[in-house]
Amino acid sequence: MAASTLFSITDADADTITNYQVWDSTADASSGHWVVGGVAQGTNAAIDVTAAQLSSTSFQSGSGSDDLWVRAYDGFAWGAWKEFHVTAPVDSAPVVTASDFHATANQSVAALSLFSVADADGDNVAQYQLWDSTPSASSGHWSIGGNAQPTGTAINVSAAQIAGTTFQGGTVPDDLWVRASDGISWSAWHEFHFIV
Image (cartoon, rainbow, N blue to C red; front, side):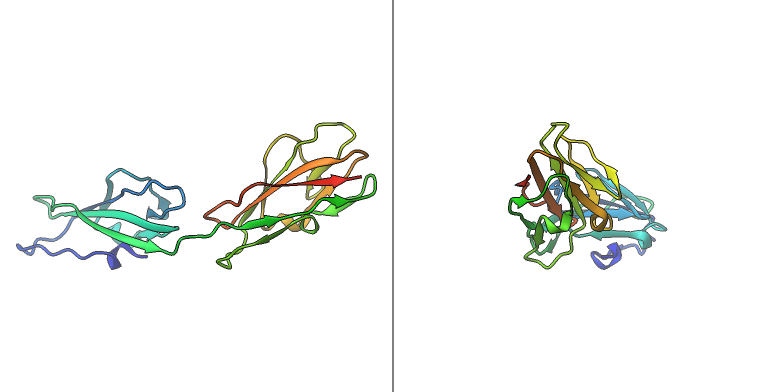
């Protein structure tokens, strides 16, 4: 939302507004944030915006309500801070489901064949994280675009990469995990097994 649509300023002396300060008091990671000139801004700090920058200042809503503030400067004095709120629908995190997968030794399986993701809000999946808890040299591994991934670490996979992501089985079972993000909220980690 353009900042100029969220508030208006009047000056009793008809002075021109030269500067603004905006503030976001909501530090929740899933909440929204101010954006100035395309750069996301932090919370709990006065953000200086010149009159020229106001047209490129916006508020990107997130999940739930944000407690926002604004004040203006006419070249002589700052006006009082004015509080207002932007409320967006609360985002539902995606839900990942997966069942144990029975495979033959050394079988390669597309990642999207091993789990599915549903989102109550109808949001698209923006990112996945995969995990392999089995360090055995005889076990399998996740592979992105043909590149083997390490065990014991969260592996970030973008929505564009997931189609080229597989699990390459080994000769012993693997303990696997997956979670998904809709760009706002992460699902819980979901555990399943690749059984050979």
